[in-house]
Length: 297
Ligand SMILES: [Zn+2]
Image (cartoon, rainbow, N blue to C red; front, side, top):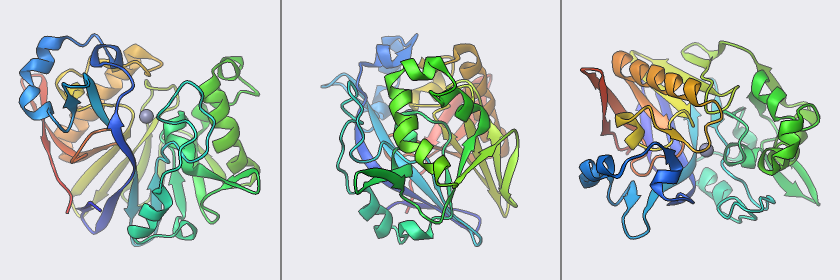
């Protein structure tokens, strides 16, 4: 299992699924033009784009972050046995995700923080698991950190738009609400330090309450960007949003701001959906960004 080190901290990728996006590239990223894909084809194929399928490669994984003080799971994939009609990649899954977490050296009881960058169904699934017909928190000793804004707009009991959105509605009711009812949720506003060097920041656009985690240790840095960026081609075209971005103008501005942070502060980018090797360093020249993949060990 691939692990990266940031100073003294260890970051391990816990895979749920590595597959293809559900739509062709020009539907997955709005504004995409095929000439740009062609120009970058040499590095896109095969880890990030499959010409045979005409689909982007899309990973769904969590980041397991181990510090001397905390064992943190960042984003919780789609989860098992969740009812997600119309979304084959998320519907009634049965993956060995928890076995992979154990293979990384951690049992669910040892996770002390779960951080969800936002409340879309592919980021909250493993928050809960089915036990005796009920959804219960998978990580019994964890505090689950959610953005307060995200929780407000995601709660179908308070927001008719979330009630009408089958994905948000189901995900909230089976993967967020049981955590709140168990008293394990902590709602965060604005900047929130988990510990020295681990800072949650608002990064709205993909969703109104989307948050990211900045990590720094011994002069090394990382950015856990959630879905502020979906696919590595967006490093070259940060103006292309995914079809899942809810506030398009803000999503573009946030993506550019986060890429600037990575380039200027030398922070490694840890997204949730990039294909192998899943992590990249970003450089910035003449108003354009470029990426160099950084494999774990
Ligand atoms: Zn996602």
